[in-house]
Image (spheres, rainbow, N blue to C red):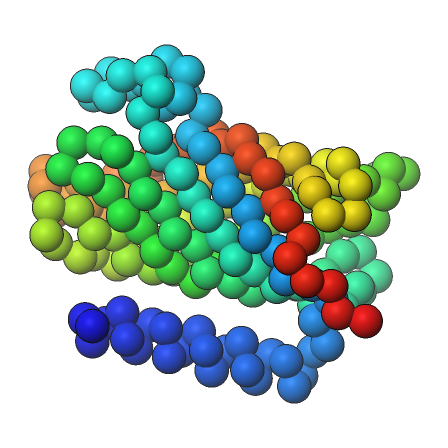
Length: 179
């Protein structure tokens, strides 16, 4: 295993373990999102409609606070674009679930730090996302994910880092709820 990947996963495991002792987590969630633009119309870079760009996340949520709760987790993104694209990282954020009169509506802000792998090169990258969730039932949510990602892979390929905006749609499943 690559030493950077090993250190990243050890760091996350330590963070996860320490957080369990500091905060009582309420649930573990799994989500999957697809980039809507690449799915429906493609882009102007040679990726046609139906191009897969999927983000999967595994996160856990802490106890309810006044306006919401904290989230911690890992994410993995894979896109079927030229030269391949893989991004993985750790995410941290806060979900606001008491800002409207509708208890099924939630807004989550997340910051991510991780790695992009493309053309046999790995580069560090950050991401920020704003997610709107609506609970269908106690096990399933539909969501819209707005994400800004530092594309350091493009910097390596074209000598210029850029930030890219993407809009994803997806589902979030409650895997386990703690009492």
